[in-house]
Image 1 (spheres, chains in turn cyan, orange):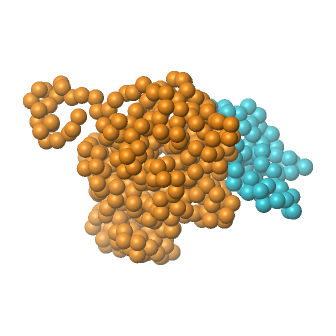
Image 2 (cartoon, chains in turn cyan, red):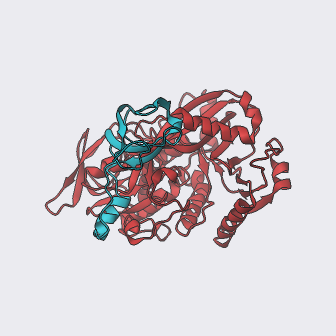
Image 3 (cartoon, chains in turn red, cyan):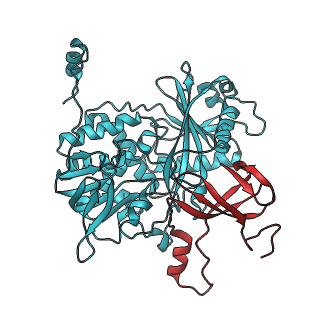
Length: 91
Length: 417
């Protein structure tokens, strides 16, 4: 797998760190215990196309949102993850 | 078919041409008391213990490919019970004891080799942590020895003892640990279960669950038709989320890829199973002479059964740090398996919220050593509707209760376990 970083170009996988599924959203501070349990522990664990967060620690140190197929490792889109600590992107 | 010195001699005299199939390749019946999904080691062991321990013989094991085609045939064959947390310690020792009598129980040579497992330590802090784990094991009646540098040098004089950054200081040794022949474990359980009447059904993929008006699971839809069941047990680690989703369940599991490697055959070198404590590298030598080794999971969700180069490089670096001479050895094969990475690094063996459906999942990358224990406690759960005492902490609701069993202490980030 190689990832085309929108800031650095095509780079090898070893420069990137994986966070996971981009779908779970942190519940509000006053959310129910169920909502927090769901967010922290439960996963769709998709077999197919999945949107996920990666960190380019060996390059521009931006958080990226990558669409990737978990069955084939094929990457279809790479874009900056808005607001999620991106080094060079405004929210 | 019963194996003995006499059957071996008979077969030898006839040029080994009269060996018979060791298990029946069955066609599905309309209904079974228990249907086990997954014809890997865990599923077959479950079926055998249901038949042998609980007298439940109207059992089917459904396998979408051929038996042992998943992680049972893709691991590094290590067996051990050197765990430190309550829940794990007792369970893995139960499994270890079942390994020790497996060949007699199954009448099958699974090549269990108690050659010892040694975890090397490289700092004072790591020595203290290993001493604590060893003491935990000994308090629980499990063998453990803390070796100093001189003892490790005597046992493995070929290691690199001049590594300034990660000096070998000693190791924690479990002499009863070792390896077993992974394929033979699958065939052995199939052999013994089939002899007790269990139907092993291959090329039979589960495509859905049959539910009654109350939502209870009463069978499965498969690529070979509908099969009724009193109870359904899932032992499909790697694909647990996919199968559970057919019953509307979401699990605290992510599927990740783990790679393993084998080198070309070399003369006998390694006397045991060894792990590098400053990176992630574990290695043993197969009876054919190849070094069988592995390391971390790749770190991203995957169902692809193949990994990537960075982890391969990392694993080989770990090997080189300990045994620089293996740099001359060529890598023969490399492969990947799909792991059920649970949120605390510990398995789940429990009833599900769906009546009639039982779960055996979340083995992370430690499932092989657990094979007999997993089958034993899952059969207990399926037969008696209550957890075995050694699996009582492997509950599905432990995350919600704050009772996670996090041996590595990294929290709900599956790719770090």
